[in-house]
Image (cartoon, rainbow, N blue to C red; front, side):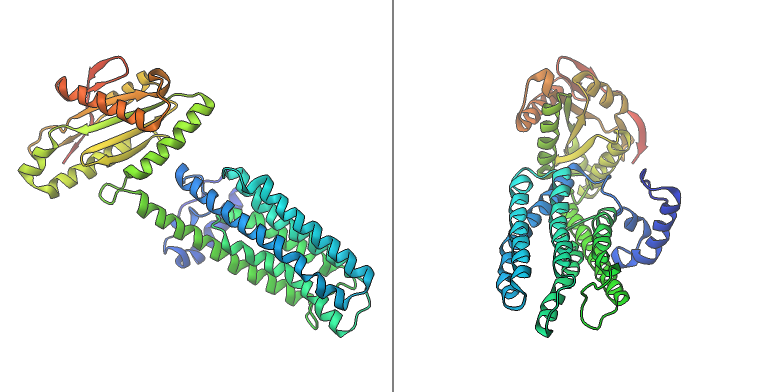
Length: 407
């Protein structure tokens, strides 16, 4: 059994989550460790996080516009059943809530999605109706009503159910779900402990609490299921089916994101274009199945020797691209030279590589496509110079293969 690696959670809570995972994991993936990965998105790729944040922001914007439109439409109903002083205050509250939803869209939802901005926008989406719920309770508390008024007033008690169920439309982790749902439950329960609180007719407070928790649980399970589905679709569309590393299309997105961060914070970012030498001979001599196995071994071996912050992409055929953030040209050359894995082909010879290194600060290249093109050109220079070598930003060195893997 694995322990979740989460700094904010103490050991006892970690044990509790592990036990919960044993009971719940079959619903999601059948394996406890897969369930535990849904606790946090710290291990997800930057591109996946960006797409998830964008989806959360898009749905938040849609819901905010919808609430801004629908909230004032209930004013005529309040006018028909409540005294003038009551419905006027409720109408003002509805107009303020509607304006707050529009303000939420203007402040957060029309900007580039980031983790912080999407979390703040979603928190605002739940905070506004929560405050209106408490406000409506204060306004209606103690008001003498007829049977029709009691029914309309009871409709305000359904608002907490809408809020906790609303979590289901967002792809969130377990911790994020709890961070949003628990405050909603606390706010929803506040009027229930007050005297003369208006409730659904003939419902005891404990019944409402139980139903709220049930709805919240279903909403959380739906939210986590959405996250799992989104991740599965992302993995299928972004991973190379043969080697399991990122594909070219996703690689360009990752490079653009990494390069944007590098330019913003002015840190080095190197790319290494890797081509397997004489790979066509493997397919011609031993067949394409053996060639595919060599590609899988190469991709896996590079993943094993690179740092956690580095990324390997299959660019096409026998070509791979390495993204090395916070790494200048000299450091990139040293990394691939000293950690270059050696794989023995069926004839016991070592599979060699030709590599080209480019780094945006040294080469003064600010576009991802241009940076890859420069690394590609240097890789061809390495082939012209005799293969099995690296052409860096200002040097040419031979490779020193390490970690021999017998094919």
